[in-house]
Image 1: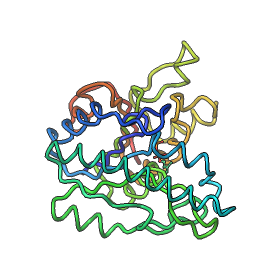
Image 2 (image 1 turned 30 degrees about the vertical axis):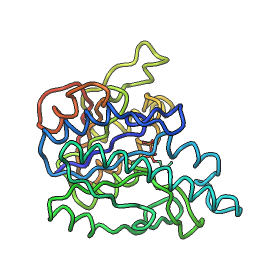
Image 3 (image 1 turned 90 degrees about the horizontal axis):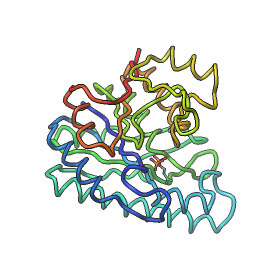
Image 4 (image 1 turned 60 degrees about the vertical axis):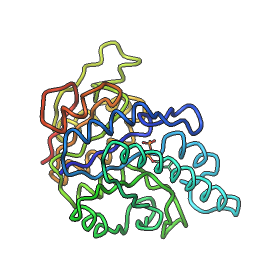
Length: 258
Ligand code: IPE
């Protein structure tokens, strides 16, 4: 089994409010269908979620009444994106069913305290493809917060122990430093948790490199600690996700779990 996260920067244009990348998502749906594996899909919120979530400071927890509106608006936005992803999957022959975190996950101070894994299991047994996504969620400690797709990847990988946890991103993978600002940045084809830890210790600012990679590192470390391999692959390059899923050589970063 594979758990795949379709990053928000791949399926949406993160700089423009509610801009869905239909062509890219359709191609990724096609690649997933062609690979014909048992999968769970997680997707990010991109410009559908991050913009309203930031505006209403949802990740800071409940502070004032105005955020109630912000929470529900953000939820509606990510649900809209989820419907677009689901439609793309359906049109390419993938029987996706949506599992909304806001009603199946409980956070406790930004961490997942409870999650309904059983519902994923039952859908998988019936040959559906469960689809979940970064969402606004109730939080025991701070009232509510954001449950990112990366947190969901960590929790699902810990429970299902897939063959690989695949992050589909808008970069080729991991670099020793930020390739956008450091011309000596080296591409990392494969690495282990120990080496990743060392990179972090040496230079925390630069370990991750690519735009939104920083927040991913924590989730990735947890997944590796579950003993699950992690792959980072560029979703904008046709065929790479397919190659990862079927085990063909391709440009990507593989991190070996322990
Ligand atoms: C964010 O989810 C969820 C909300 C803003 C509501 P992610 O953090 O997984 O989304 P991307 O992949 O960065 O867009």
